[in-house]
Length: 405
Ligand code: PLP
Image (cartoon, rainbow, N blue to C red; front, side):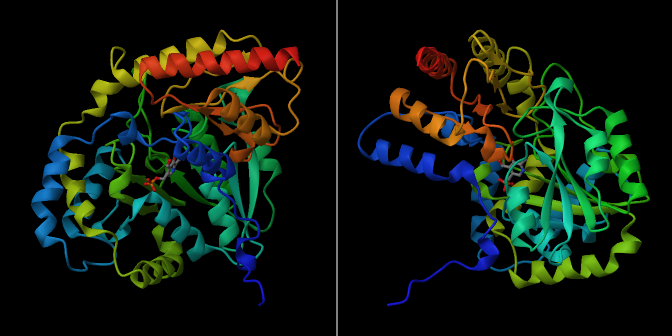
């Protein structure tokens, strides 16, 4: 019998967040062991419930949800997204410019499939949310990773971005607020990135899925609100801001200089049509979510559960010798550094696996986010205060033993 191989298209595609280490954790759980999971930004599994009125709306509309709807999505959902774009000062987005998808993930893959020919390059942040690198590769493109600079609040290095642009570069991806670093970019930086895109005819893909998960009273600016003369494609959804990852409700919209992108938009429309439509019940939740009471605000205010957990995780992690971290201003993550002089790690996946096996804490290694050195890991600060305290104490004990090796 001949072996059945995966397609060559998948050769450079990987997504470590759901890779071999979490698979080992799953086996350990099956054996009856309790693992503390600091590895996935899945709010519902940590007791962060979706807003009640959103859930009720879905239930109420379920009987009307059995049929296909427009490939771009329910009119009322897209209208609500359109109003959201207006509230974020993004001009000239019509219902027709909006696509509802099975989460932002589906639309990210679609947006890359619709754009790239073999060998086209896309600037992707490093560290990144690895779906972006995978989506570029799957579409036949080449991800070119630009540095986000830890010494400068994890902001993208403009110099590095410039140095990575070639004749083949089609686009730049901006993840703001950022996963995995928790950085939030200032307007001046966003304007500088726009200027680079303008000078080099680049599309800006803006992943803004955490745009309401903001701490310390900071505000988020959508990069697409800052210019009209280049093309922007912006991504968002209910997964994080509304604690509804499992509903699979996301959207993307094109804005800015749409005139130059008629052909690309036609490609997006073809791809949207091919999958007929996105999951309908969740689309009914979008209008209620966007228009209703924004309960995420209670969680991120200084006394809110998310803010308290961020503060605690930051304090406990940075107390460990040889661990440093930029304090996140947004999102659900931090990306601490292990001083290589104290922790000479050569394979960070192995390091994370040993931590799992010895201390039953699950993290994701930094290289899983296309970070080049084996000296970082990502922490999701979603577990409650007791579990976070316990997990970080275990990490500290593991690191103490590591230092003695
Ligand atoms: N973009 C970023 C930066 C994310 O962190 C995630 C999920 O963790 C996604 C997109 C995917 O979101 P969705 O659940 O809408 O597919």
